[in-house]
Length: 150
Image (cartoon, rainbow, N blue to C red; front, side, top):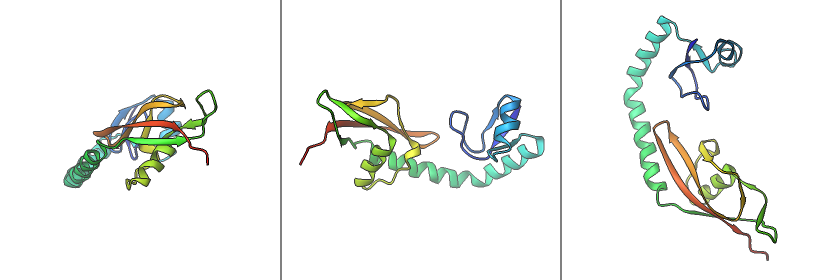
């Protein structure tokens, strides 16, 4: 079953992509949730016209994402967290903590666009990927250190 995505769906595609999915996934989840429409001939024509009209706007959005990626490239974060005597973190460091650390540096990044591949449960160096646009992403190294007790 071919569908046109109305919004970004993680693991499937981005807005205005034409994707092939199993019938049950399309009929029971994507269409009722308003995330996709059936890719009929008329819907494809409407999509093509909309994309043509939005081409320059999308180019500007991509240029802005590339500019932000260039600013984020030299950034290296240090995240202080509570650590046990063995060096294990209480809880885990995830995209929320990385988004907060970036916000302290003046970069407002949506936490949903930050992907941490490994589960961060120990002190050490890791990398996170920030997906700014479907074609633009940047890797940000971060180091997890023990929080200084006062």
